[in-house]
Image (cartoon, rainbow, N blue to C red; front, side, top):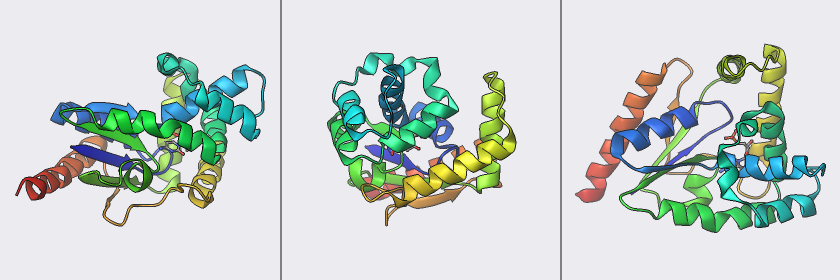
Length: 211
Ligand code: DC
């Protein structure tokens, strides 16, 4: 069983995907961390994330043990991740790892941008989580403030617009809902309501799948 949770930056994918994994007892992978890892590796070497060769080298030699690095969540790393993620060889280098993770029993929940369209098009349940840019900017600002990173709301909103545009318009694996994805707009939902709606949807897919 594979649950794909895709959507734009700060839509609440991570929280939702983690809650689904806990509810069903499945493995969980935040695939954005992989792209953030690649970006962080490039930045730590003093290289430019816009350099396709540097980004590809970092992706091909990725050491997943550094996944937990606190610096991965920095805004600058998120922006750089969105830049390296547009290079096809970077995406290709990370594909096998994601697919192997998804194949684990009894099931896996992966969150990202292209899980339902490219990484696991066969996923039994696909959710596309979205929310207005303003609500996402507010949530991201609160999350950053909690981590002690003070960024003005306007800057976070501008960052979200920029990242949305880049993730949606890249030619390889752009951010787009899969044709069979359930679109979950969390603009007016709190976390528990969003999780409840997602569980209802996944249960309906499981019932359909085992019928
Ligand atoms: O979900 P996130 O904000 O941690 O992701 C950081 C960037 O990584 C995002 O702007 C685009 C990229 N990404 C991607 O292209 N494909 C994924 N499956 C996950 C993330």
